[in-house]
Length: 192
Image 1 (spheres, rainbow, N blue to C red):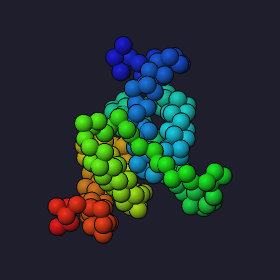
Image 2 (image 1 turned 60 degrees about the horizontal axis):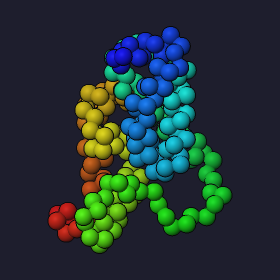
Image 3 (image 1 turned 45 degrees about the vertical axis):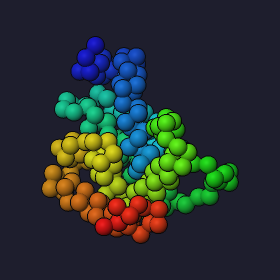
Image 4 (image 1 turned 60 degrees about the vertical axis):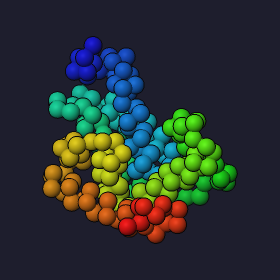
């Protein structure tokens, strides 16, 4: 089944077809949500909510890039959750154990342990810096520089003009660079 046929079947109420769409896009949706939310648990919740919203709204999909349509739902769900958390701050029920989520499968086992630790610390530092960006800049930066979306795909996903996407991305990159320049662990070659 092509993606268009799968979407059509899902629009006609075929749950298995919608589940195929979920399987295709769940990694991308979670990655975007994780970068925007800055927390794996919140990202998992936002991703699940986004897929529920997409399931309820699948009949409203009218063509174009399904990926952009779905990522718009994911990004809007993340924004909704961030706004909710701003209005109602909360304390976690469980204390932080010092362990953070990371992707050990991305580390090269041939690298010495010191290199692996440095890479993990760098990834944490970059994510912390991304979390300091305003949500609108954070989303555009993640879609472009982490997920590799084109400017046009970002414009479709965010429902923004192409020029707005470019200017927000430029501001996000500049701000991210400034944040990272102040970090001690940033290698000297990146501090110029």
